[in-house]
Length: 87
Image (tube, rainbow, N blue to C red; front, side, top):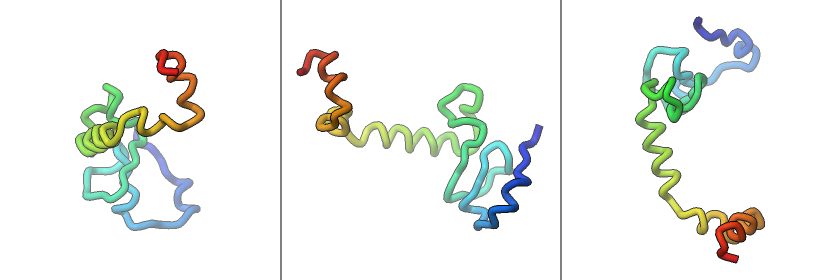
């Protein structure tokens, strides 16, 4: 069943390349992609349009720094570090 976006008319327009909705439109070049049916991490949508790009960004995001570099000085890290026996 196709998704409807009738409500979107009330918020105006933006250039099409800035609002590509995966699973709603035919594949085309896009600057901003909305995974409206779920991100490609889920098996049900793993092969969707722009899935490869999503996985590349996911790998890059998770490889940019370690957990300790990101969270180490945060108050939220303390319970994890205690559980791991680091503190």
